[in-house]
Length: 355
Image 1 (cartoon, rainbow, N blue to C red):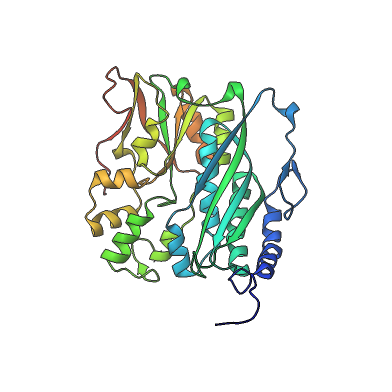
Image 2: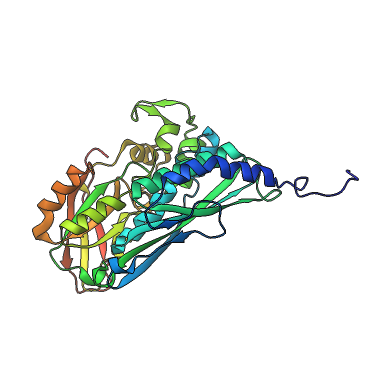
C-alpha cells in the first residue's frame, strides 16, 4: 500500500492525457463546422449564432442517441474511427424526420482511461459524420471513469439540435390516403440489433471477426462495422423538391413499428416485402440463429434505413432525385384508409425475394 500523498492520477484520472486528447481531436473537430459557429473547441460552452432573419418562425428540434453495443465490435477489432459516423447518423436522421435541418451536435465520450489516440479516432468519425450531415460539431465532453469502466472501454452518445419553419414541420397530420411510401436502402445493420447479431454470429455460430465471409466479400468485422448511412442532406433536398408529408427513421423496433409512429388515426401504411431483398448479413443472422421473421423485423432494419411518405404525384420526381444523389430508393407501399383502430397503423406484407 502506498504511503505517499493521494493524487487524481493515482486514482486513475489523468488530466494531462485529457489535454493531449483534446489537442489531437481539434483538427478533426475543426472540419465539422458551419458559418454560424462562434469560437472553437475548448471553451466551457459552444456558441452558435442563430440568424433569425433566415427563419420567419423558427422551431428548434433536439435529439439524443448513442450507438449501443456496436461499440463492442469496434473495441474487439481496435477500430474506432467509424462508430462516430454511426453516432451522428442516429441523431441527425431523427431530426430530419420532422423536416429539421441539423445545425450542431455535441458529443459525450465516457472512457475507463483517456487514451488520446483512441479519443481522437472516435472524434474523427464524429466529425466525418457531421460533415456528411451538414452540421457543426460544437463541442462535447470526455469523461474518465476509472474503477467504473475498464481502461480500454468506452461509450459514446450525442445530442443534436436542428431548426425548421413552424409551417414546414413534417408529421402525421400531413399524411393522406394514397400517399406513396418510398424506401431508402440501408448500408447494412446500421446501429440497431447488435446484441442479437453478436449473440448469433459470435456466440452461436462462433464466427471470427477477422474471418472472410464469401457472401459479404469481406470480413465479418468489416461488415459489422459498416457505417450507418446518413440521410439528412438527402431528406432535406427531397423536401425542397417534392411534397413530402413526413419521414420515418428505421431504427430500434424495425420497419413497421417506426413507420406506425408517423401514420395518423384512420390511415394505415402497407409495405410489400417483395419490393426489395435484404442484404446477406440479415439472411446469415436469421439462418445461423434460427431467428424467426417476426423477431428479425422488430430488431433490424432489414435493408431499409429511412422511409419517405410522399404525395403520389411526386413519386417519379422523388425517385429520380434520390437516384441522382446515389441513394438506393424504391416505392415499397402506400397509405390507405383504415377505420379499425385495433389494427396496427403499419404492416409489412408478402415475402422477400431470395431471403
